[in-house]
Amino acid sequence: MGAGPSKLKVSEEDVAQVQKQLRAHIKNMETVKDTTLAVTGMVSSGKSTFINTDRGLRPEDEGAAATDYVQTTAEVSTYPYRGLYSPVRYQDYPGVGTPEFPQDTYLEKTGILNSDIIIIMYHNGTPKEMDLWLLFEAVRAGMKALLVHSKMDECIRHANGESIAKVKQRLQEELRGRLETYCRTHGPVPGGLTIDQVCEKAFFISGLFEHAGQFDFPQLQEAIVAALPVEKQRGLSMAQYVGSPRLIDTKARELHRTAVYYALSASVGGLIPVPGISAVAVDLPLILAFFNKAKAALHLDNDEFNDPLLEEINYAGLMAGLEPAAAMLFITPRLKRLLVTAPLAWLSAALAKGLKSTGIGIALGMAVGALVGGPVMYYVLRQLLKRMVKAAKIKAKIIYNARMEKLRR
Image (cartoon, rainbow, N blue to C red; front, side, top):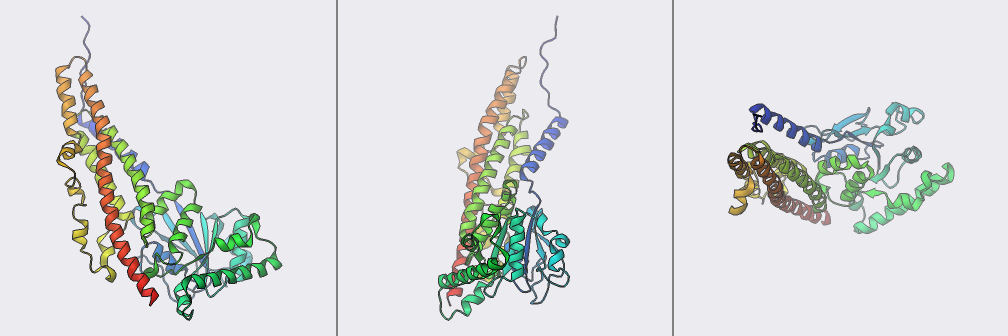
């Protein structure tokens, strides 16, 4: 008499293996690609200040680049983003033609053309000849390069009541004239670009932390992301400091994609045929991982609320209900019962007991867990994201309005 079908047994080792595989899968999804953003320019062109601000740091913060008004960049210095996004880093390069980095050996000595993008910063009207030389060399090498006029706040202060739009228009015209003069001596812009195209792609910013979100700063952040290879764009867009409400929407779209990926992982978790294991091994780690990722990307850490402009915000009240342990509390009672897939796993076990000789019950229970676990997880993460985005926009709007009012004075 032949032996009947063997019962499906799941040991602690099997559970540990599932957890390990899921952790590896999530880690692979969340891996931030190595990305190098090169910033160069002459003395006091605002490089270090910009690098700090785009990473969400003030000059006095730990990890900030030095911003003294001397040649602070005597060698190539590296400044990574914080936490989850440390593989994305700025490299601060000395300007072309300094004693340590003469023009004829600059490219070879610095290796700047190995970067993912080159940001050339200047101020006081127009770029220097060495700035334009580097721009042309980068374009010839097929590199993405951006021209950035910094210290717009100083330009506005000395504009004798001229509007921001008028000041920017005047600076664009000065840049156009400078390029025309340079091209008459050194030939046309490489890569088939026209002078007008170069001027249109120039950015006019103030790199100061209190001006993040003003002038062309948000547009520059978006342009840097867009210039990167597709596989590197996501890491940088999530790492950048939120200086204006518009950048929050970009981050929210990326976080929504993450929620979709996590929901798919929850569907896989629903296949674990052990009562309670899906909830412990899959759902809660996913909620925790998503919460921490969104909190970092949207700059909702407590330290971020030390800005004097945010005195009116009660951080604890703003974040109430968003902590991972309370992440399920704002879900309706009906959905709360469905949130974890443990009930589905129990259903699997009950069906298996009734049909123990075939294993069909386990298969059916696993299928139900997979079909329901994913949509429920997506709903939970989407609700959590909506509340975190709302909190970030409250913060950003208050800062943005206060800074604009200060600038208008």
